[in-house]
Length: 104
Image (cartoon, rainbow, N blue to C red; front, side, top):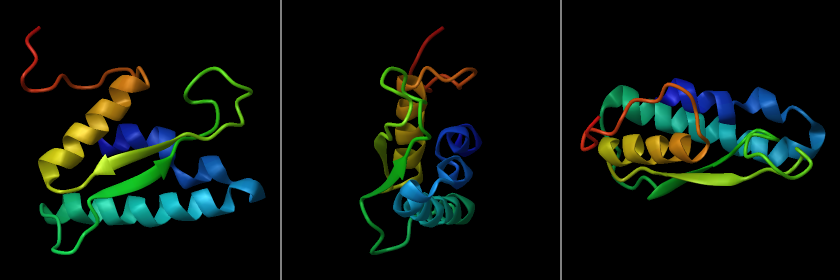
């Protein structure tokens, strides 16, 4: 799931100087969430959510320069997965897995 989300939040998409702050936020928070997923646990004292900026134009509409901020809940690995799924669904991403409680 994180790989799919990276398509929308990868810092390289925010390479323009005007997105310097947003790029830094994405870099830091990608490292944080990847560490949590790799470890299989959320460390004590972790924030309740991590913010990410979506690449320009990924939300449709506007002039393509507007950045939208999304948040991934990080209270547990399950919350991370649910948050990422919700973001991908809202973006109408292709080939995302169904949520476990959904029936085909």
